[in-house]
Length: 152
Image (cartoon, rainbow, N blue to C red; front, side, top):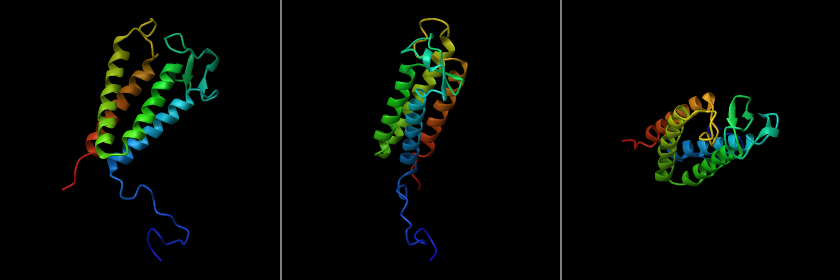
């Protein structure tokens, strides 16, 4: 036998037939859940003993690079839950990717505008976070627009 059921125990892929925009939104949602959870894991996040709820005083760094706080991690977890919930429909998936991309572009601008060493930096963000937010914003917008198009 040849094809997807060539092996007697082969199972169909649950993503088969699912529109690409839904798969993209679900994948991004899972990624956010993973990053949000990893923000609490000692060893992956350095300085977890200095993890604060919010503010620039948090001394925790995801992968030793991205400054995080409990609030920052909770935002990632919330984005993950929203991504998975909205990925259930094509319009929801597009909304998540395009709307979430816009939110992350605003976060990028916020990171550029705010002084990283002041109380206004509530998430907190550092230069690495700023550039990651730009990449996430652009990437989510591209996925939302590119995979959300109807094929003729």
